[in-house]
Length: 356
Image (cartoon, rainbow, N blue to C red; front, top):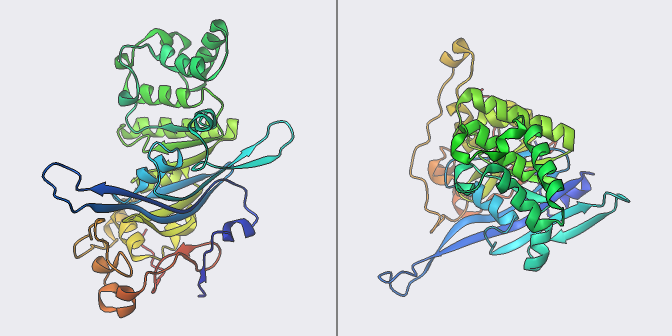
């Protein structure tokens, strides 16, 4: 199978319609600035040269173990965390004539960024932490309209009621406080608040990981219905592969700050190429007990490298059975390359292995 290196323009050449394009995104955090740390400062490589597109009307999922850089990548896109380098291009579609304006989010001013955030929103993992406990949920939603629009008060109240109804809540709930709702209801309110300014692109940062399974299904179905009804584009951050398979069109697998594999969701689950993806999928249980008993768990051996001092070559080499014995894996970093049909993998020795 041939491998073609992915260039920054290769997504465009496939005729895709990306809403957000990330090119060579890097985020490093500085350590060693404390009182007793000495003069030596160290850098944590949280996101290391990441590039991907999120196509209009589709959902891109980013999966990986905790600390791999998923949420940091999402926050860099909105500049909730300032990136160290790279490009973040947002393509704003004009509702009047259909023209597209390309905006480099890293280059715009703070005032322009505040205006742009009406198009780019986020649903956080913990809705409780994102609400003011002293404000009713109606006031929390209405506050966004006060800051960003010139709507008179009656219109703001009508819009608040409309949003609560849209996410499956009673309009009378606007007078209640966050602690009076269940976890699933609070997440619905978080979705309503994200929709207040008619965004086109929403980042869902592990939006159901803190919910019971039955409630997870309700919230996920709500997100899918809203996407169909409003034409939304999602970047979906999760560590739950079953959830990703249900809601995402495409999946990118991250390891130690880098994307190691990316493909349409069913193709990645059916034909994973990267050894890290093999291990992730083998660890995810399947609903069929007979099939589950016949599966073999692929256990990763070796220590995970530190993001402070990542290894030369492939970052997965110390935990990969092949990589530990191959000089090439220790000497050269594998590029994210197309192995055919848009299936991207960053591995010198990719292997299709069915583990589901």
